[in-house]
Length: 502
Image 1: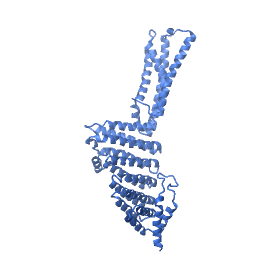
Image 2: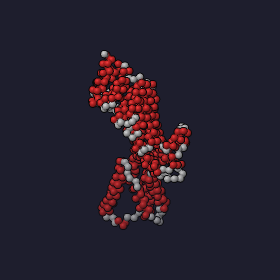
Image 3: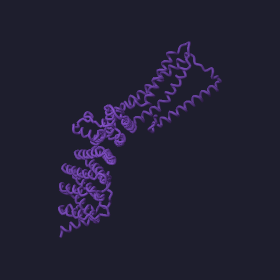
Image 4: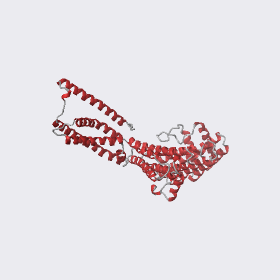
């Protein structure tokens, strides 16, 4: 059963109800008043043939005008909106029951008005035809404005996204338990791409709200698919090359073995939007990174290691694309969500956290080679945070993650933020009883230039506010050290400077 899904649709229903009651009341009252005022008996109200023909002609012209108004509105609004979002909107529009019923109403009773003119002859006045003619004409006028409001709400971006996503969900629910899967696979594939097109078109127009809403719709689609995936037959996961142009036979085989072709299709739509949003729409970058993190966490909870691996590969692809486009802001956002995924995985999949640390280090080196030194330093701070979280959770891979940070420092040639990360970890290890690791961090400071140590100490000493003084997505100050460790960190740096001085 259809239910109103938007404010304008609800307004359309209220307006239609108001017009129906209002017009009925108005017509009854004014007719009763005229009958009373003129003293005419209701039984004397009979139309002759000439009057009936005139009435049919008037209503027929009115229906022609109404139908022209409605069709003109649809013919202009639908193609323009479809071009903005997805061409499939035309199909969706004409499969909507309200749209079909309204258009059929005007066409049917417009034809009925013409038929009435044809059958009205001098010797016969069909009363039933006249009643239907009059009621349908009045109803047609009452429908026009509410229907316009309904169409406008139908073309609302939120409604379009909801309907396009609903088509994907409906198709997922209709996947057969067995038998031929090709038609169903084709429809799911096509409808996922429709939703992806909405994201792409929104990003191209810098329509932030629509882009983010469509990105979230893709995430919800993944969630819907996760619910039906365990019940699907093996044949469903048989990915075919023609649905993934550009992928090698090995890549197709991996999707088939991992049973992740649907997830890959959805995440690939996010990647296309990510690439389009680089240096253009930071909000979309942040939303896509967050969605990929949440998908990875859900995959971990569902024990779907193949999907988790796919999310990690997409994170790596996001980072590479950001670096290639020299978009520091995008790298800033992706690194944060990637780090948060690694931290959340520590307790349940520490080997994956170690893998992510290595990826963060690898792309940090790539960033430095392309001149994005800040990304390299950002990686030092993020891996250091991952190291601290690993030791807090006492995971076996903690030492290996620490080794990744040291390898990154050696490969990068160090820097003030590497000194801060090392000194902070030295203080943390000392406070929490990890003396060997603390000594290891302190010993590493011996190779750092004095100016870097002095710069690191100065930054930590003057940075007392944990909130960065500009508006950023992270909003935290990378140079800030928590009060519980601040004095200890400064003591580590002072000790190293004193050793060199004396």
